[in-house]
Length: 159
Image (cartoon, rainbow, N blue to C red):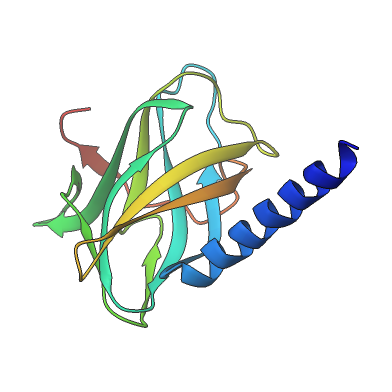
C-alpha cells in the first residue's frame, strides 16, 4: 500500500524540520517590509535578529528585488546618509534591531509594487563565529507606507 511510505516520509520530513529549527542559531522577530507606491523602486525590510552564539548577517536576498543589500544609516555632519555595509555584527545573545533610520535590509530594483497586506519572502545568511553559514527563510508582512514613523530625510548615495 502506498499510504504507509508516504506517511513515513511525511513524519520524517516533519522531524527534519523540527530538528532544523532546534539547530537554528539566529532568531528573527517582528520582521516587516515598508509598502511602496507605484513606480517606487526601493524599500526597506526591518526586524530584530538575535544570534545565540554570535555571528554576522552577511547577505540577504528576495525574489521581489533585483538587488538586496544590508544598509546602515548614520549622520554625517547635518546630513543623514545611507550606504551598503559588508555585514552586520550580531553579538551573542543580544538583539540587534534593524529599523527605519538605522540598520536595515534594502530591497532595490523592485519587480512590483509592494502593497500593505502582501508578504515578502526574504532569505538571510548569517555566518557564525565558527565560519558556518546559516540560511534563514523569513516571510515578512508588508505594512502601509506610513505605518511606522518615517526615517529622517537622507541622501541615498549611488541609488
